[in-house]
Amino acid sequence: MTDRTTLRSLLAEHWKLARTLRRLEIHFYPERCTGVWECYEVCPVECWAPDYEHHVVVFHHGERCIACGACVLQCPEGAIKLELPNG
Image: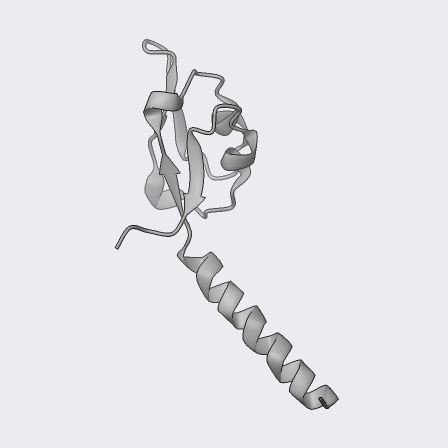
């Protein structure tokens, strides 16, 4: 295998992964939320809003979401997932 073939192969894999990552979306499972609010605190674009009455968070501004995954990593209950869209 030549260097050029190896490079083409690596680039093809890179772009395949990049296309998949661009399609990922945040999926929120509110029944799992226990109101730790770490997602609210870590979100760089303020998608989350605390619901103090029910002691949970609400995915309030989904249109702002950049799918960075910070909330996914911070949620101790697994209530937030970064997944491919349904369909």
